[in-house]
Length: 104
Image (tube, rainbow, N blue to C red; front, side, top):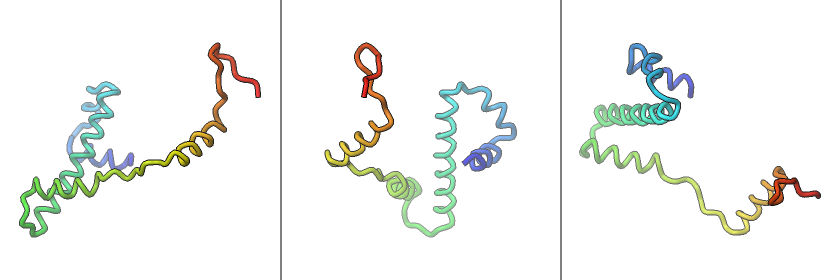
């Protein structure tokens, strides 16, 4: 992941470190995500250019983004949710209202 980020930055900018210094920490994360999205879009553009397609690029992009960003999470049943909570509670010490740790 680190090398991919460096590759994207140096491919687009001559001096990426100066550019990155202009961002705050919060905006830097958003900017990095934006760069990854632009890299995916560039890859789709190259694919669309070199592949015979009767679709326009926006339609081609929309179709491929749907495939890439489908939600992969399934909803948990109440039993699965309770089992996950019970598992997590093994590692957490409950605290009383006053802030003291409950005696076991």
